[in-house]
Length: 333
Image (cartoon, rainbow, N blue to C red; front, side, top):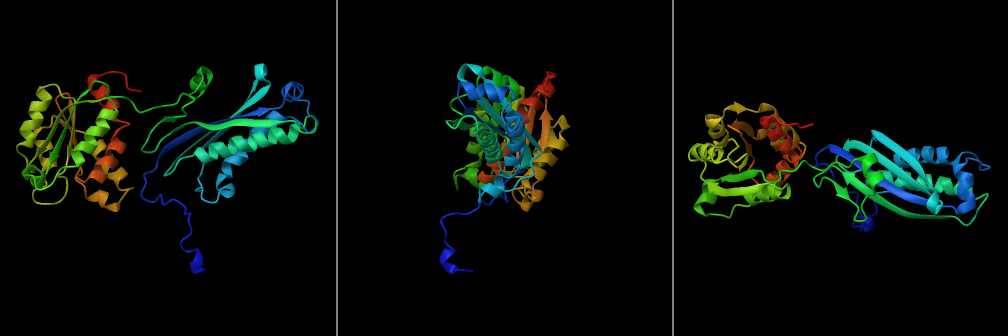
């Protein structure tokens, strides 16, 4: 290998430690052919054939070939590509949309944008025999879903038709839900170091709209955590995230504390935490994460590092509001 290029100022992003999540992106752009050519396009009488149908086919192919066109774009097995060409008579424009979706460690924004560009270029190619003064414009990502950041919508927003057609989905909110965060650590409770994991979880709950009523650091062990959980449930707290004490050490007793006060265990969520965490690191399988219900309060025992707190918050965020709705017997679809 030529060593002179070993420190090149570009690299393909390393996504091996990211979780596989459901991803979706929609991109948009416009073809502006002018009044006369617009009529020829929408009436499907161009000399080369039906430009709208061919543009949709080209958009499908363009989305699938994104990684071949852009050297640092990860190859993805797309599970959905939909291309729409929508005439806008008032502006003599063809508005092109490309929707892409899959389950992957990285997003599908580039695939959606590649699909839009391929469709627009095809419209240009098929229309230029009748009108050389053509223009393309307004190419942008409309919105994307999935990954640790959830829903992102372009600052220019979506119009009513776009929102109704694509129905962008954000995380279910916890607006006004009383929450608590408890950190279990002998050293942090003695003041040997400042806890960082609890604040990470607290910030995650606030972003979802949760009302954080209690943030506390406790020593490891079954007590006083068990007593604290009973008090929180009695006070009306609905969601409690505990961080720390889930390992294999002699003082890692948080799961035992949860089980000692549990009205029921929620084994599926605990297994999901381990399984999803293992996508970040194989050490995730060593966690003794636990989830229980204490009265109407849902309690999670989560790993204790700040990094693990961020990761598990991202894992849980899509499910928390739905889980509480199930406990309350409310609709949660």
